[in-house]
Picture (tube, rainbow, N blue to C red):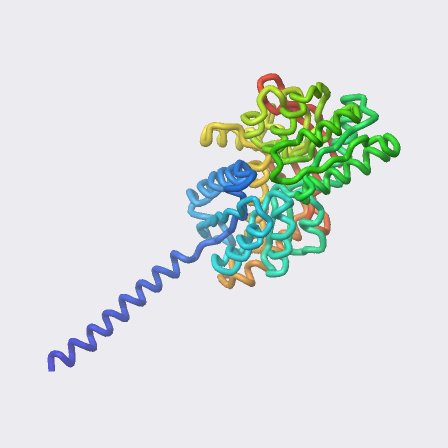
Length: 393
């Protein structure tokens, strides 16, 4: 008789404990999951590190306040970081994992266009909003209503580089060295050539030379360029390649100037390039030296936390992530159905007409691309990136 009573009681107790555990679990799982598709290894690991640093700082800020306030309710954030190894295929796989396995409501990154273009297609096909902080190639967002960015585009950056270099160096000829396997580098090189020759005449780009992503020796390309006697060399390459190219050009006797693009802007550039890069110019998204207001506050906090000045990738990641968070808040409520929440975020992102970022105020066009100013910086004698000029659309 006692056993008959005890057994049902034990069953009820187990069920009750399971119910409590499930209830506790569901509360813990009520988090806003955002994925970061970034290069933590591979050719440009400093880009991934900068993105993660900025994201972690923002995550700590918001979760310290109890989470993101959405519709009068605070919901904690969870950031999930996936390494795309600086490879296009890995970026697609990272996007699929974040979407299908981790159930994120939005993705930040990839940064480099080489990874952002294919991953953007994956996110668009899977109806998951993606914001690239750093990609400037038009194909990242073109005809992809689920993909956005926080950076200006190469069709804008190309003329900025042409006009500044023509004025600064009094140039009528130029040479271009670019990575043929990188969508960003190849696309920007082609835009630069087209704009420069429209401005200075046919064949004013006296050498248009490519290299591979894994190349370490650029002597053949640089010899051809130096022999063409350009007024300057335009190098729209990643910071790790730039350091090798500039040093090897100096070893071959090139004493003229270089003009670079935003992929030069890593904090790692001067560690790799040293004195050889001092005095050169590149177009980018913001200048840390002389910053004011919210931008200076971000820079000061980043320097205090990580011991180095944040590069443009860090600042753009901050802006890109805040864009997604604003979209979540603008939607008015948070839907636990992931697919419905993704749609709400996409709709809210497409409705943001203007955004005050730390990399500048930006307005968005129908493709999800921001219309914003570019900055040209000079690498000074101490290795700092110093503001030279601001160019707006």
